[in-house]
Length: 74
Image (cartoon, rainbow, N blue to C red; front, side, top):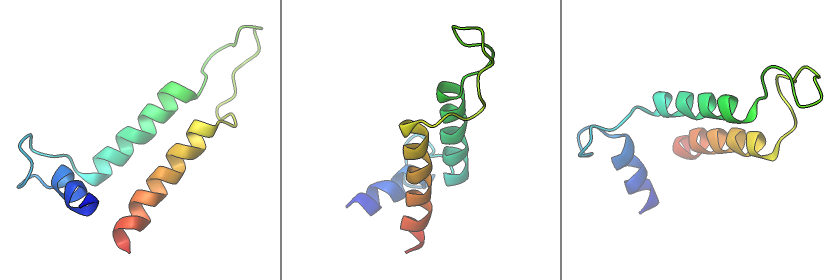
């Protein structure tokens, strides 16, 4: 059932709203993760923010992307 729902989400023929492509969805997921979880500029102490900080949600997003890719291939 989950595979059918996933197929309907990304299939423009079966979706009422036109669907989106899988690469577009993955790119949007990466952009959202960068915008929300990567600090830009200076932090509260005035130190420059790092580009990538260890964060559970970033790792979870990466695992979700790999899960989607390899789950559909299998």
